[in-house]
Image (tube, rainbow, N blue to C red; front, side, top):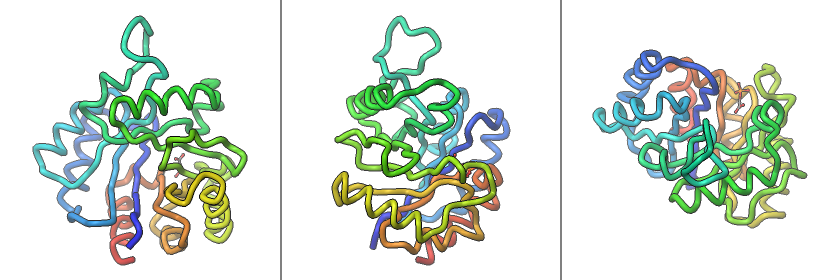
Length: 223
Ligand code: PGA
């Protein structure tokens, strides 16, 4: 059975109160599963409270960050270094197209962030915008997220996403796990999750609503 990652990317949304409310609604609905891994990536300011709530509730929910610093801890004002957030996070989304576009993040910076994540036992999840985006050599989990599909309500087709995922695996190694992201929701998720080369979904907007997110997890658990 292939691994299926269902990952919530909250982006710059949810206060601590709203985050805890989401966890209290989603957490109790999750069941331990060998192959379906559910991850939530809150803002940095919610990480501590969310990870505490997950622990206290004993929920099978993995916590991740949406970014981390390319530097180790030290004189880097405003940055969140991997060594400081490792106590809260297992996974880190790196190189999201919104960071590349709005914060001038380059492939070189993404590579440094991947190195920081790995040094601190955090799984790097690198977002690639197409087949041409470089995948750092030691990164084994990526998300194919075509820019046109993000937040637009117009996802890529499962056929094309599967094709791109296959070619990314061919280029970077068959042990690479490739997720799809971009306007995924409970209605269209099955089409992506069923494809041979797709190992899950990175979900923005549809992950903000706890009920909608749970519906997506339920679909993954039936496959
Ligand atoms: P979306 O965002 O699901 O709102 O399109 C996905 C993402 O940017 O990771």
